[in-house]
Length: 594
Image (cartoon, rainbow, N blue to C red; front, side, top):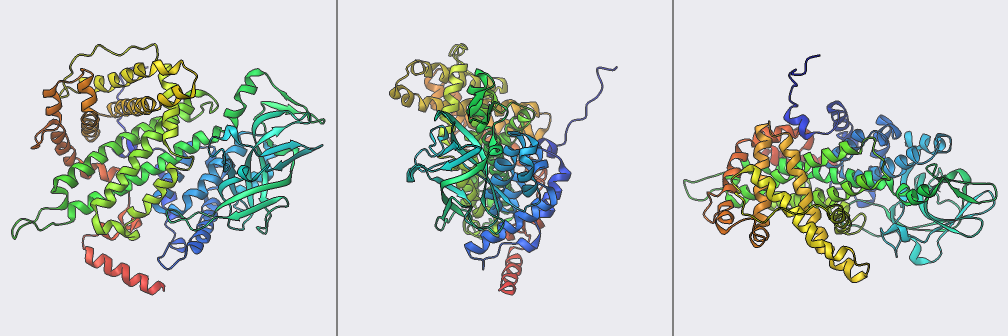
């Protein structure tokens, strides 16, 4: 067999996209159905109902289990909903990933079958109930109990602070939910946090006996029917326990672990679908960042800005617009390729193992922060046009905020993952502090690696001390390390595809921007000298970063085309060649809908 056969390089669009183009196109068609278009005349309640109707349409066309267990398809659903149907994001997270995904992977097929059938044809909507008032997303400390009661379990909320807060279950439709609770066996022994399946609402949408649901108030950022849930002797069948084959419970209610390793894996098993969900939400925010850049950069390249009677540059020619948006573009593409690599690594991985969990936590912190900043920059640089929902970018902001705080402050993920990473890197010393040349691409990569290893070593004194003070003291270093390591991995992902000149241009801007952002750190650690810092970004332009941005600007049309967005499907007036005419049509259509 020939060993030197030519391997065709993937197209730029294939490098950026994750998953089948045909499935992405199918989703675009489904999600662009005008029957579910959101109008300015709809109340929040009407938008909630519309979202549930649209979810039902989506599920009936593509199913649930087949998508939840096929990660490229699952990530594609999140990405396309994020861009075209933002009201669906809270619903698909619960239905596809957390409920269907848990039932499909954490229990036997016979026990899951009745629930999965309902989820597969949208007879019922799936959701997961983990967080509580007091423990928040630190779910290992949840206090809801599932106590053995002869032939099954009873769910109870021990006191108001243990109420489930704040799953989206307010709309009265049939519900299949996965509930996190502490399993208390027949001997009264607390066996830790486990997952259970329950029908939270009956076929007619009424709360099941033993369930109290209180819908929370208006939420301005996203359309969600968030609620507070409490249980008072909600009865569950024995088969409702999602044991993941780690333990058994006999007719007397005695729980037996398969082995000691199974006991240790129990909590990781119960939270395994959160790992997938964290990356799915990060992916959808990155998709919104790409869409925002596509809209803002296309608008900026057309929008003429009269500056003198004879000088009328485009908005993209103005330095503060050009530098901000193109740097954001480089960071977004870098995170897209980095995220794609993490997505690929999850396929077939053991989601109870530490490595994939930490990899996703690192990616979540690194991707979501930048996505929010990028969408914000696009909104601001579009000025008044960025205020209108018709141009989509303002609507993406709410999803960014909701996803970043879905499990509390995203910093928690970064700090925990950074602490684990610091322990892993304890035996790898940083290089000697010698000055590097930022004009040399190889030196840029070495600078990012040196930053990672140096921060890891600086964190070591705090890691061996078990006190709370030490755990708090290491958090700033842990967050810095998480960011530095992820930036290094993103640069490696870019380098892998640098055969594309567009990706090579992105790589240079991304690396130089990272060095510029941390220039004082590199300077004080002896890795750059003052001349090198000045060379990266000079006050009157002409520096390395500006040159790299100029190079990236030349590749802008190809990069935006590779994002595979359709102007007609997006429907943003600012994408039209004739902005005034586009707004006139939009306003006329809105009047007709009244």
